[in-house]
Length: 457
Image 1 (cartoon, rainbow, N blue to C red):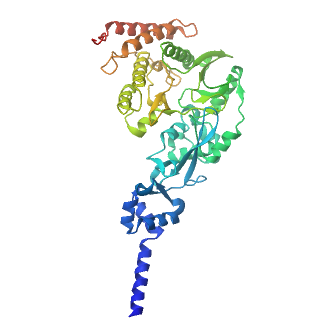
Image 2: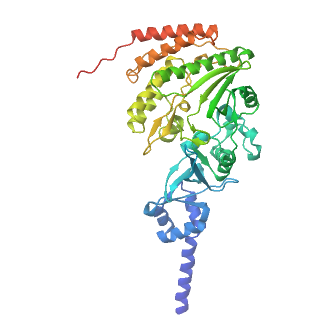
Image 3: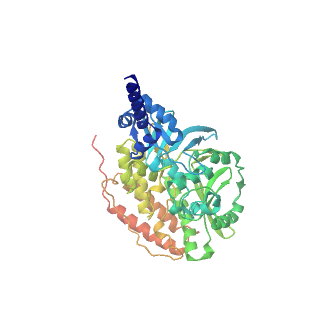
């Protein structure tokens, strides 16, 4: 009888042990994106203490998210040369390096960003700042060619988030904003020997950029490079007027962009500092980067595209985005008004490229953000299509219920912009003639627009 009892006890223990192996934990979690600790314990028929021991035995293959009874678990994924986790660093405006947490790679392409032990945020894709840091635009196209050792797809349009993470973790020392992801990229940043450029160097840097982009991963398809010049980090766009009608038009647009940013600044708004000049028959627009401070310092920056992708998923207009973000208390009333003003001003100067990547924010308090200076503001309806000039109609829009409050002032500033373009000697006669017609169209629309009534006191 004693032997029978012992045998039964042995079989029960064997059965119990079989139900609580790490492999069984993997099997259960494999069918779930994320599992709360209580639910996971119930499905495995084990106590929370036993579950904790199983998770510890699983090591890097399980990510623990949260604290105490709110803890959840997920399977991890591993990338070659990276593993399942990446340290995250932040560089201050005084160039001091600090830990900003750790990024855990989860199965299915999601991520857990842990800022303190057990405290963090889970993202379905890349965190917003990482999406902005990824190689893109003109400067990003040559990234795979410049770094063949990473064995990434030759076209960045074919990349997925894992490819972007590999690029950021191993060659991400000079990205937009103040984050650096991974030890390898931080080591590369620490080793950087900053070389100061002069304007006389710009033609050579432009040639290098044309064959293989120079600088960091600033977005946009306009030919450009980044440099450290005059004690400031700058983004430099360029065109060669003598190379044909399309290049001549781009050289006009570089001047127009500097004028637009000047009008915004003169009207009391924040805009990137910019100036144009010619060197050896080439035209350059030098824009001071506002995500950099001094030689080595940095400032945090996140695009409207990244915010919208994470929280809304609309990508419609700056005005509608402003109303949504203000309703959620992500931005101040002043910034919401400024976003609507920029949307109207951009439309009235023919900027047809008001996508969500062309508006950015500085991180604020408690999840809020502050509107960064305006940039990439120019009459893109005049832009060439490849090597060809394309005639497009300029159709300034009247105010709407959402823009009526800011429309009159934006319209007056748009008239000022077109007047400056029409009177600028460095701009071609054909564009100056177009500018005169645009100025008249906006002026006429302004005269017909309704006047905002002043509320009775």
